[in-house]
Length: 581
Ligand code: C2E
Ligand code: CA
Ligand code: CA
Image (cartoon, rainbow, N blue to C red; front, side, top):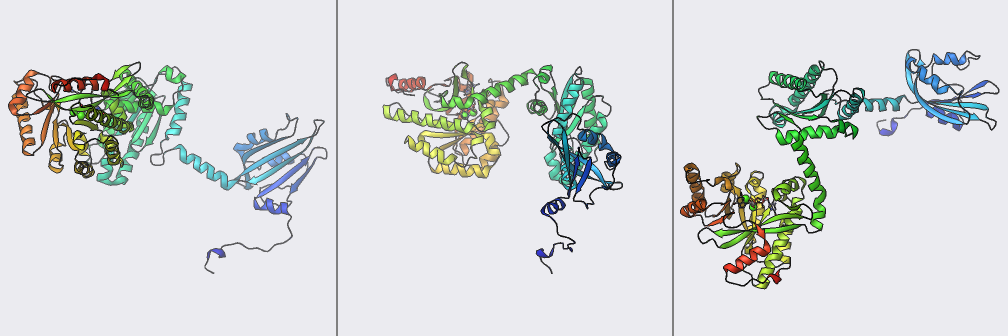
């Protein structure tokens, strides 16, 4: 019969079984009962074939004989387990132990021992339940050994590493240690070029080399953390560390593959305080990673976590802790930096720049929190907040006869891929009923390098709705020219780097002229940012750049101050009571 139900066993039943017998057989169990007063043993079920021991044996030698059934390495444990000399009340205990089922072949058994003690404190009987646990325990052991090492390299994994490193620190407290974290630069590329099989081979190779070179150290632990990342804990002596680094890098150079295999290294020196605070080993490895992130580059492959990084990390942590509360308690404000006519110096528009006015720390510059918010996603909240404040401000201008000129808001790169961005913008602008030509969006050049198609869709939608788009920081990266070909931006905002420091810098002048000429030919408006000197503005006037932004004319300023200036320039008297921010 060819179906799933055909797969059962059937055998002839010799005698009727009690429920207990049935249960015991089913669980591969048997019970041994010993009565103290009668000094008798009873086995149930009587007929059992589960261990290599003749239960019919009688006499005082019986217990000793049974020990021969216990797998040697477990004998001591078993003796300890059945020792009831200290027992004064009824107890129950369990143990997993290996017993021979036939000579030379053992299996795991779970033994539960119950000892009954009467009110007079005399032991009455013991009941031992033996259950064959071979299958379960085998599975557990397999799992345990699986999670101890990394399967690919057979090196300890992070859990094992953490445990072993703690042991190391504890057992040799006088030694000073460092964590060295290493990963391969461009490992993803290697996988792409040569396939993941070759990638795996390279990792195994690193594993072997790591083992080889650590062998000559005295005290160490190491592991394969994940993908292309390895870590060791060793003496903090730089000579030893450099030896290990050199060994690994030299080995990589010898790997027979036409691919430049560079390792990058991050080092964290473990302090006494770390040990006292019992900082988790993974956090120490993280610090080595932070050093790598902050300091590693193509030239510099070794980075040591130092005080400056620690301070930065601490400051970042503080920013993250405080950001939600800051938004809820209106600690974020907008400053406006005017954009001016290069010739007349009069205000033609402005850029909204966020400021965090902290109750105790004062004004915090966006340079100190925008990059952090970009990496943790909080920047989208801030960008919407700035847009909201900007719209509210423009509404107030319109309602109170303050000259309303376009304001640009920055859209962070991290925010551009949010599916709600367009919706949120439209909603906000509608809420205050702000004419769309008074809002512009600044998108930094580096965002264009990532996904032009997506960005193009977003820009087209915004432009369809009459919002103008600026490419911010033009020329600060590498993507600009290509993006200009593919994207229809409205305004080019030229990065401060393009601005010659003085009139003698003729090469810079030629480049600036060409860029502004190109923008003109493409039909783009231009804003030159970062204009600080009279000399610079004269040059810009000469080249024909119409709009500028920079400290020479105005620094970013509170909204109220901006309002006073635009009113002045329009010969209006400014009424500060119309402020209701
Ligand atoms: P950005 O968008 O390129 O803004 C221009 C920065 O240059 C501003 O710094 C401004 O104060 C500064 N600046 C203006 N004129 C001059 C000058 O003549 N010389 C020099 N050396 N600098 C000048 P700020 O306000 O500190 O902002 C720094 C960056 O933070 C901004 O660069 C922008 O990337 C980011 N940021 C500021 N506000 C926001 C915001 O609301 N959202 C997002 N996503 N980013 C913002
Ligand atoms: Ca900007
Ligand atoms: Ca800029």
